[in-house]
Length: 220
Image (cartoon, rainbow, N blue to C red; front, top):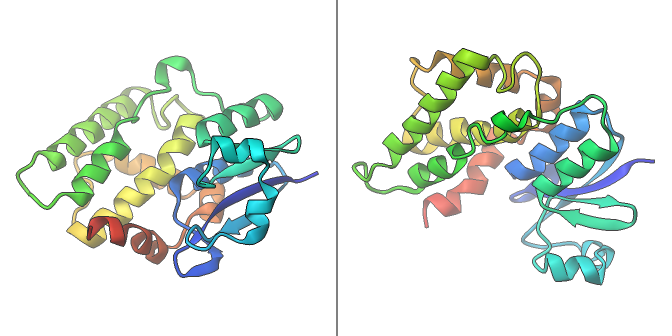
């Protein structure tokens, strides 16, 4: 029986997969584990009535804004991509995607640094350097342990980083004409590896929808 998963629809295109990196993380995990699933696309600006009805009172208490992604396990909707991925690993252990604990936090500050730099209006506020510092740390790690964060096989930490790095590459190029320095060769090889995976191709949002999703935040 297919799992039900609700993820973000594209801005202005409710029938097309949207740009949420946390939704893509869950979809990547489902694809990598080959778990049958039915995907519901949710327009967050105009949530369908069935979505509200579908959610139990208990779930709404936990997640009153009806945020996505959410997955239905045993007739109960569960939110938070960290929690969802943990449950998927427990219920569907093959192939194993758990990241060794010592590598679980690798790259964890990249997304926050990227968002700060993307929104920055001041070229001298240090946000670019902060992002470069985090990317250099990832490059150093991959040089020693790569090609993936934990070695030769993809794990959960890679599936979390892949959508975030995709958003970083697409939006910084579009809004700031900025690209990851060529000197960070291991990061470049890593992004190529991740973005070329079949699971990534199947679950990524089109670049124009990634840009459209970030535009209001950049121009705020």
